[in-house]
Amino acid sequence: MPSPSTQEKPPYAIEAHGLTKSYGNHGKPAVRVLDHLDLRVAHGSVFALLGPNGAGKTTAVRILATLTTADSGTARVAGYDVVADRSAVRRAISLTGQFAAVDETQTGEENLRMMARLTGLSRPAARRRAEELLERFRLTDAARRPARTYSGGMRRRLDLAAGLTGSPEPGVFFLDEPTTGLDPRSRQELWEVVRGLAERGASVLLTTQYLEEADRLADRIALLDKGSIAAEGSAADLKGRVAGHRLDLVLTSRDAYLRLTGRAVHHSPETLTVGLPTDGSAAHVRALLDEIDPAGTEIDRFTLHSATLDDVFLALTSEVPAHA
Amino acid sequence: MPETAAPLVPLGRAPGPLTHASVMAGRSLRVSLRNSDALIMSLALPIMLMLIFVYFFGGAIETGAGYDSYVMYVVPGVLLLCAGFGAATTATAVSEDMKGGIIDRFRSLDVGGTPVLAGHVAASTVRNLFATVLVFGVAVLIGFRPAASWSGWLLVATVLIAYIVALSWISAAIGLLARSPEAASGFTFFMSFLPYPSSAFAPIEKMPDWLHGFAENQPITPAIESLRGLLLGEPVGNAPWIALAWAGGMLAVAIAASGVLFRIRTR
Image (cartoon, rainbow over all chains, first blue to last red; front, side):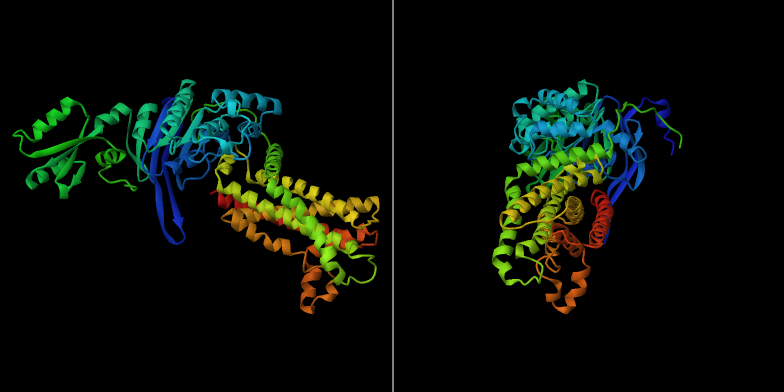
């Protein structure tokens, strides 16, 4: 199938059209995990696929990284078709999954040398490459220790390094929830690593459940909901559509509650509480309060929360994500 | 299908499956050397088995004429028994790989399933050969006196290696079939039992009639017959060739089955 877009427009590092995938489960009706997913990741950009558990993030990454195939739809990664040119795609990408894919009983150095040899480097070249990567990912001190003794953050860094052993270095990176389960400090360190990749001109597709992570790292963010893109844009674009905070108002009357439920992103009829989107600035909160309750009688109390991923989803898909 | 944009990422040369398999073998060997409990077990068990057979049961087993002592009779059986036990660890190792994320890593490095399994089988073969040499050494210490010719020794080594490789690859396929390493180790149990209903430890004629058909025609028997004959310098007829045909057949089936299983498991 010819894809007209690649003819005139700038080349995309990742380009997917109509990816659909269902998983059958022992006679039970098949679950559609991806539903006509379209994606375009510009060369040299960081793209975040944001969504809750079960939204199809991992399946999308596995299809694009050639580990599984879509039921229908096409995708090109680094210019190669993920089905027809599977081997070429594999040599052009680096994949870091949710679970660190390193040998626990081998040392960091041995793991990297092994991976480097598998990409086709000679023994001496593999040794040099492993040294370089250990240095770059600040693992030199731990190089001779078995990977099972590594902290969560070190393990992720080793895993990332393991995906970088090829020569030339892969140009397209898939990071599937790279910071899930990491402590805040390790998360910061990993963010630095991702920024480092971007500075070197790599294209990165990262999946995450954390709005903040997408915000900090990505040039573009796509919200994945039930297997297709619910919204896409730069962090600023999306923030314009999704307020960064939620103002919860405890109302004094049922009438006031019913009047406001239409614009609320959070409801609690028992406590007569509604949550409204806001950017969290004093000016906006004051304006909201004045607008809703000019007489100053309908609002009992209020609290301000940072918007959660659930709020973002509510605002953009008006449906609670699966894990809520 | 018209080609669209030119590939963005220039690619280096792709290494072949042989390179992959040899790197994988190095990995499996390194990992098995680190796993000292399993290593000691795999070396100690065959020796213990031989001592048990020779000293506990040996006196009670009547092997018929032609054998000075039971140790002369039992060595081939112990060798194949320990080949079965040794090969069985391959199932656990393969299953551990499938459980973790490492297989996805290998696949994303474009390493096929067959090289990964070949690495495990190669490591298993090296481990088993160590155990085999050890068993021979202890056997000689307790009275085993082989009378094989040079060509006999060569054929003994060929038959042993062929069986170790075939059993290891069957074990690798079982590792792919099992849903957990524990299940994998359970499934391989039957393989370790195969030498018992053969002429490995007692003559088939002493077994019940209904077992003769199986015992005479199962894959372990020609291997036992040829190893025993060759080691004692007796005529073996075409037993070694039947044994090698069995090993080749089992290996071919195991490779084909594991290829299919690998594709199913990684779909």
